[in-house]
Image (cartoon, rainbow, N blue to C red; front, top):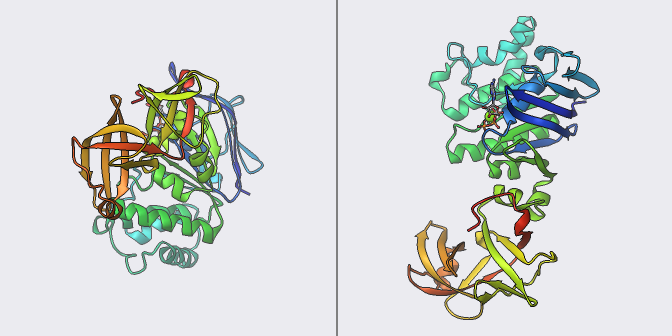
Length: 362
Ligand SMILES: Nc1ncnc2c1ncn2[C@@H]1O[C@H](COP(=O)(O)OP(=O)(O)OP(=O)(O)O)[C@@H](O)[C@H]1O
Ligand SMILES: [Mg+2]
């Protein structure tokens, strides 16, 4: 049983409050991602679960076991918490071979040599490193080194894995490959994974549930990837989950106005406020050369290969849109800077401007 439960966790360094009353439960067997900006306290939380830091107040449970009690100072030693950890930037040991790196936790636990060999070879196969056991880390690619770190975390058969930005130093292709591998491993081994990242793509692809944290360590929303993406609790969550457009809109005598132009959308706001902000993704923007919609002008046109990326000036506000290059070619929508166009929006989300969290609405 490897549920993790944080109960009212407080953690400060001097006058800097990193966590102030954090409550969160990670269910047994799920892949749970904590997504938040740099400095919001993700690694601090990891270190507290692993037992390398104590909360100032509050309790951490793994399964039914109270492993850290900030009130009394009672703590279970890190090596007795039945977990595997891949820390952020925590590389493999450079002076040990792949085999020895992975075997290390078992040697520390004084297991016998035959058992160690069997288990390490099992893990080597599991993380796709067969044939590389004798190599030193300097003879491995970044992705292979990450797999060694994963193997070392898995070797003692933990019921819980803590992964702190384990794919940070990999290029985009490898990162994508590894995130599928981690997901596969989790399905195969049925362990609980607590994954920490500031990369929303990884979080959406990997997780059963995601928690989104703001800069101050407040949990803004917890839900499935589809949940948080489709029904964001607020503008911070919306913004953190992908490229976003925020456009100020005024409600005036039943009309939705963007500057001097009326905005026509299918899903009207059900918020009473006069000043609203409409939020949408680049893919929710539909442009045409003529026709109805907000009138705008292309201020930047970029060819991204599969997509065309445009910045459109509408009433001195900038909207970013992307459309499939093939479609753009077919529909005569390869536009250039200075071209006039019409903009329509679909699948928009509404926010009350006075309750916005994020700054820099454009
Ligand atoms: N040992 C420490 N002493 C003092 N301050 C610390 C210590 N560890 C962390 N902090 C501070 O606590 C805050 C949270 O740090 P943490 O490492 O958890 O951030 P993070 O969310 O993991 O960020 P990143 O995405 O950049 O890794 C930061 O402001 C950091 O400077
Ligand atoms: Mg960190």
